[in-house]
Length: 181
Image (cartoon, rainbow, N blue to C red):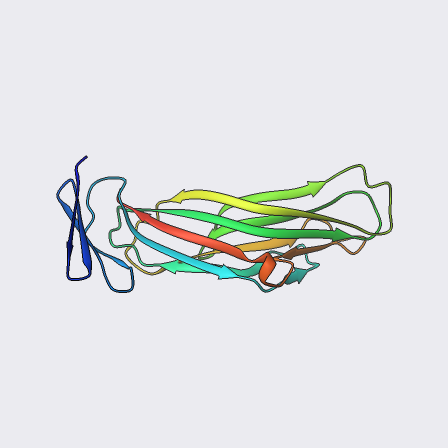
């Protein structure tokens, strides 16, 4: 793979295997990228508001991002990093489920749980990170929204699950990369 860099009038042009890319004044990459595996678009979103629930029915966490694929044959690589908190009073086990969705379609789900070692203390909490990477084939050139949802795994002893605990130190991110298929 050959890389050539030419600077002209504040713009940098890179040629990788005869593909021309430009860096504009806002440091945004412009141009056409070709070839299987090339990243042609990146979208990222951040969410830092706490979302607490006590229901065993899934609900949105507030973390979402939308992307409009440039080709229906391209793939979308979704990367999620979301701090979560599970809290419960009474009982020994506690859990929650976090899911990644395209629109209303569940792509993946992860159960975060602890089953023992709690010694029936009156209150307990577990801080974790929901981390997900998923390669999706949406087969569309329409705007596509990806998001996360959460739900409690138990309905007794006041279980709670929380995404992003709240505040700037607990932000969640979702990144969407469109990859040439």
